[in-house]
Image (cartoon, rainbow, N blue to C red):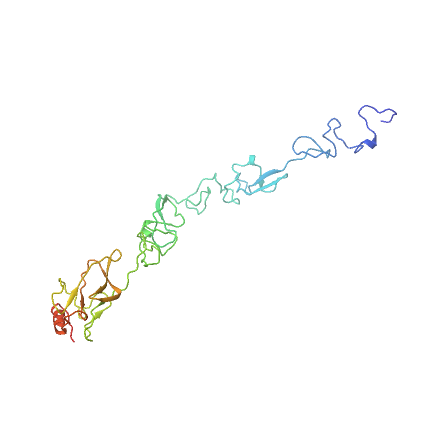
Length: 308
């Protein structure tokens, strides 16, 4: 409008940001410089229409209305994607390239396909079995079980195992109830509740008198031709021969003898409790001295075969 006086609702060009382009001159928030607000039904920036808001689209490549959970957020619909409202589920499709495989499908037994995305194919006509966990595959289970038709990972039937319970460490194959225990290593290999204490090597001896070697053994069982292991109770019955036995405590199952008649045993002589072991010693320190012939007679009379 061109006139001398300023008309109502009119401005000079110098007072305006733009002299044209306002698509709604009745709304001060609508003009070419305004920020467009998507989805409000207004053309806020006078660009020709309301701007569409970005949408979260869910992948459904096979078009079975089940998504595998993959998403894209944008205005336009990507190929192979759908809105939430068009889907039966937005996740869980275990094969998005096969329309017959989805959480809503019926499982077909024995076809090798997990049709309903339940975790595996269903065996046909099979009854549930009890499966025992053996994660370290050592043939022994810790007793954990699952009852189902199909074999779970790391599980076995009872007939496939050596034991169905008792494995105290199912992550280490050398530890199970049938394992050989290694003493003193701090590990309970055979799962009996504790490590086995190491027992010193058994050494059974008959000592010499005046250089006469009467015999010894360092293994088990005993050699009757070397050491007389006759049973009976002996003390100082013979003045020239001392025969001694003792059951002192050593650990939980063993006894030890560290000295006798002032003769020190190093290491101590160790023997199992309840086993009568007779230590035949010459009396080289205390009198009377041993009569070798008497000693030989006692040994041989008790089943030994000892000669000078």
